Each structure stands twice: as C-alpha cells, then as structure tokens.
Length: 507
Image 1 (tube, rainbow, N blue to C red):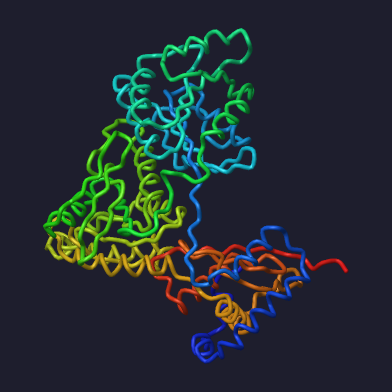
Image 2: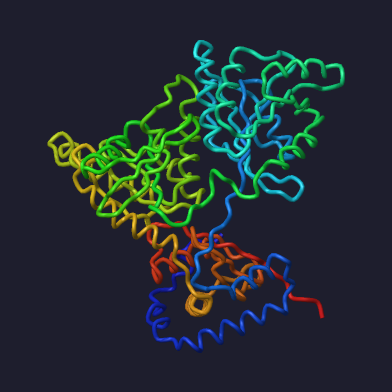
C-alpha cells in the first residue's frame, strides 16, 4: 500500500490554479462529469445521493439520529448473548470477567427495515459488596442514553434485590421498558418467566438469547414503540452550541467547567431533573452562550472499584451523542497516555468537531518542570501520539487559575465552522481534477483507478463521496484529505471520504 509521500511529487500550484478558475466553467465541467456517470452501474443509493445534490447546495444537512435501545441488567443474565442474537453475529464479549474493560459498547442494528443503535451495558463485574449501587449506576447511565430500555432478568434465578433496586429507577425514568425473561429455553420454563410479573413492569417477555427463542417477537413489540428518530440523541437546531468536556480522571475537567461558569459571574442554568437527565450548564464565555453537555459525569462521579473505565467510556459516548464539539483536556505535567488517545479516537469515531486543551500549562514554567525538560518531551509526544489529529486547534490553558481560558472561544468557533462547512460540487470536482492531474494515483496491477466524480454528501462532519473505477489506496485517500485541509481549512473537524467503486455498464 502506498504512503502519502508516494503522491507528493514535489510542489504543486493547486491553490493558485483553483483560485483562477472560471466559476461557470467549473460548474459546466461538474455537470458533464455527473452526466458521465450514466455509463456506469449505479444503485438506488447512488441515484438518491445524486438527486439530493440539486437541493440547496449551501444548506446544512441534519442527519436524523438513530433511535437507541439500552440493554441493562445484573452480570451473567445474558445481556451480551442477547446483543449478539439481535445483531446476528458474535460481537459483544459474552464472558463477564472481573475487571474486563470494554472499549466498544454501541452497536448498529436493524430489524424489519428499521435501523437503531444498541447500547450494551454488560461485560464488567462489580465488587460483590457494592453490587446494588453499581448496577443502579449502570442502569442510570444507560437510561440517559436511550429511547427504550430492555431490562434483562435471568428467569431461572428469578428477581433479586438488585433487580428490584433497578426497577425503581426504571419506573421513575418514564421510558418504555421491556422486561426480558432470559434463559427460557423451552415451554417448561414459562412459569418462571410468569413469576416476574411481580416486579410490576408489565408483561415479561420469555426469550432464550442462546437459542433465539422469542427474540423476534420481542423485537416486533419494541419496534411498535421505538421512535423513528431518537428523542435523546437528536440534533437540535439553533440555541447555544453544545460542547462536551472530555478527558481522563483528574486532568482538570471539573476545574475548567467551574472556572468557565464561575469566573465569568454568570447565571449557571443547571438543567437537572430526574436521574436520567444529564446535567447541562449554560455558560457565558467570550460574550457568547455555550451549552456544556452531560456534565453530570464531571460533577457527580461514579465511584467504583471495577468497571470504572467502562463507565468512563459510557459517559464519554453519552456526552458525544449530545455534543457538537468536544474539548479533550490533557494534563501537560504528565506523559500522554493510551487513555488520552483512546478518548480522542472516540471523538473521531463519533464524527464530532475537536479542540485539544492542554491544561496546567503554567506548571511548565516552574523550576521543577523546566529542569526535567518536560516541554521538550511534550512536543515529541504530541508529534508522535497526536499526529492523526494535527488539524485540531490547540489551546494552552490553566483551568485552576483561568489563564488563557478565553482562547477556547475562537478555537471552538473555528472547529464548529469547519464542521458545518460545505464545498460546492463544482469546486470539489475542480479540486479533484487538478489534484489528480498533478499527482496521479499509482498503477496497481497494471491498472490506474480513476475518480469519475465527487460530491460532498453531508456536513457535521464534512463527508465526501468519490465515484471511482477502482479502489484508491488508503495513503492516496489520506493525501486527498490532507490537500482538502490545506486548500479549504477544515481545522478542527474530522473529514470522511467514502468510495463507491462502479463498473461500466455492459452495452
């Protein structure tokens, strides 16, 4: 596979050439390229994409958020087995091993042509003494995240005190709850499922996650109440822009939030309510109102011996679902950790805009750190570990003293403007044509894949679709992204480029 360097071929005059192009000519060229696609085998999705292109080129597209189903319950009741059954593949970790940390807890699924997200809260084992509190905390976070709850109980064991503890939370939530009586492998176990009526959550649905028994009927019932668009993760339009403050424990997230809310002497609007409502803070920063979302994870820590990383990952996912831009706080007095990089990668996976806040910067000027040459090592770490997000705005702050906090505002504004940015189809195809002319894709197996046409399918994050005659090397795709940034900015936002390899129609 080629590296980006393979396509460099020295300096080019791309920016200059594009600036001097006649706009009318650019549009005519793009129309001709689009018409040329009729010679290729296109599917329904292609046709829909090409049709949508004619609608408001400058309009921001808001993609509907998929509805969310959360699966909660004690360890070893079969949550992960149920996730695998619904997904139709073995993806969730089935063994509930103490201390296991799961990176991935959200899965895309489909039933009866309905797409939705599953949040699996399994895969950890709390300490026996704190089990009630631990399971309740897990359920609370899951309820935050979802439109519908599947509460899984082991029918062969029956309801435990822990289950009853969770039931209280579920009743208060007001969310639709499906009581799933698992491990009902045949009709002889049906009475065990019926006994769960006593929990007061309505009809118990007898299923066998391992054998698949009853799962289809359960999903049919869930589809009747599941909204088309998530009420939890929906993208609001208008109002203060939504910011998530993320970072590993003790990097200064709480200090940053408190300093932002307190130093400015503003009325902090705490939109708390029931247990399922995340705490949002409306903060006046730089003369503008911002909504810092899901700060419950910062202000009300979940103290657990085991499963702490798992909770942190859930909280991060919850905050990202509701945010538009993430501020990842990094502690410059310590080496960048694997956990720091994992949090940044979660932001990239979520497609949100990104700002990096390097906290405790004032410490680098103290003798203790100057002697240790910490700043020099930090630059090396940033170069090595954060190379893949070199495009993210960096702000050096001290959350404790509030120093340089005002620099966050322009960084947030730049990142959000890039996240919303759209390039007209004509301009994008002119960019592709000129780029390929200067830096052609290398031959692969005697063939050279061509880019037939490109369009920006959506914003938030900017997503581009390339119609090609063959697969483009990953290195070449990265090269296109890098040049896109150099020409059009896109500072602070991930860029997604999707390929659609299409063959010529048979005459």
